[in-house]
Image (cartoon, rainbow, N blue to C red):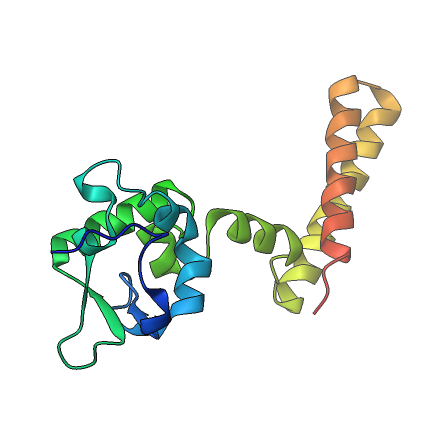
Length: 162
């Protein structure tokens, strides 16, 4: 049995490689783009650092590499996650990674139904008016802070786009 590393494998004979996550065949170039850090670690230093420890040619089409078994596929996925080649399985199932989720939640404001917005605005305005009347007789710093927070909430509600 030949032992091939990433640099010694005859890649010109391979057109597609099985994606360990989806199980579908993907173009060799795309596989290289996604899993290059893992592939570069296949340098022959130990038994698991050979291409043929993980992959074999398909008996149906010898230009396709497939994973030898499910255990190897699972280990490859874990190593690819550690190398930041792919997101975690939780992120894959969610359809976005944590960074993208945070970015999306910052960019898109929560949309509130218009009738609820007007009701909340009216409540905040009433609260601000009551606080300002109280401040006239008792200029307590906590009341001024509460009024300022109410104004901030009012600004947020009036900035919502529909």
